[in-house]
Length: 214
Image 1 (cartoon, rainbow, N blue to C red):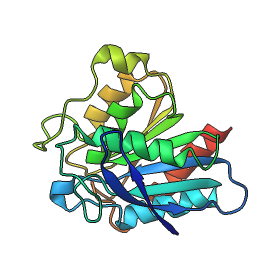
Image 2 (image 1 turned 180 degrees about the vertical axis):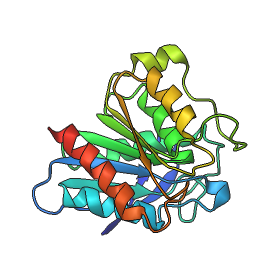
Image 3 (image 1 turned 120 degrees about the horizontal axis):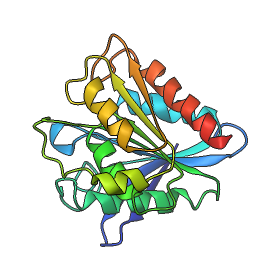
Image 4 (image 1 turned 90 degrees about the vertical axis):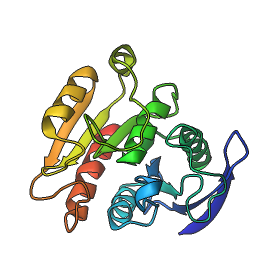
């Protein structure tokens, strides 16, 4: 694991870690953590499991803390300025290889990742884990509109726990219908946090990444 720092376009210094690929380097991945106001950071067992699974499949994985979280500079931007953080992380990750870049966002991170990816052709595919939908009560910007979602033709994985109160199956199925290349996976017997099911969730994301690599 290599500690790194990188800067956003508005001059915020972010802390992160690079996990080198096991074996041949085939692509890069960026992990976006949950809500900063609810204890979210890059250091969570689910994100560790995803990082290790992807590294085992040939991805160099960049995990980072959003602005205002732990050692990252700047201040919390309610999901708006954090889009710049994801863009900077993608740019930094792509310095490692020209291969495809997968962006994985969980909860708050999924909302931000989707909004950033709409305009960023550097994102080859998205894995959105527990993306908050419906009346979730969280402080988050709205997701892109219908026309933008329908125009997004890159692969998307929608992943949620069966008991996820923020990301229910009916809401996910509605989002899936708006995304031309989306697939849906529900992990039974768990919720928004995937406690004790981290490896299973990570393996689903890893299998999706393998399909991205062809």
